[in-house]
Image (cartoon, rainbow, N blue to C red):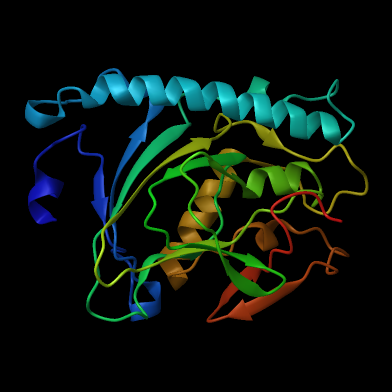
Length: 263
């Protein structure tokens, strides 16, 4: 891991584990390249990785088009397509790819491949291998997502939940470690520009207005201070306590009832 971290590959976008973890349930047994789209065409790819830039460019272009198409359909379903378009505020300078590798973990089944969390974006599109390990929270229970080589996984992110006034739910998910087999996946994250205002056109609003920059900074501050992401509960307006929440080790997490619209 240390060799990859200091090699400079992909413009130093390599990361591994959970640097701020203080106990096993905060640690992620994984490594990844976190690559902003603006840098894909300029990435330092050499040797065995010389074809990686072309592959990333093609994949990013396809996922960008698909994510905007899906965001448009979901926004139109909310009934305010003409008032706002997520596609218009999403910016390639903030969208990014994450190339994930989850090494086999023979240490303990209690070690996460990726700790439970929600995504701080509008939409995430995931392409995974056939090893499995992804789980999502539904009806207060962890549900295993069975790999399908002919399908992509689409997650609603925190920003879409706020934008939709809780019509769509940001799904809490995790990756469980595998004792014998490595797992690989590629994720595309659809994000707005940092100064984009996130607000719902449905009234009364559950959340106060905030910018993507403000949201990121609050998440980073919470993680730095507590080791956990708090997320949307930080932005609840007074009187919106009807959301199902729970507090675990100073971390308020939304229990997700569904990836899609509330039934």
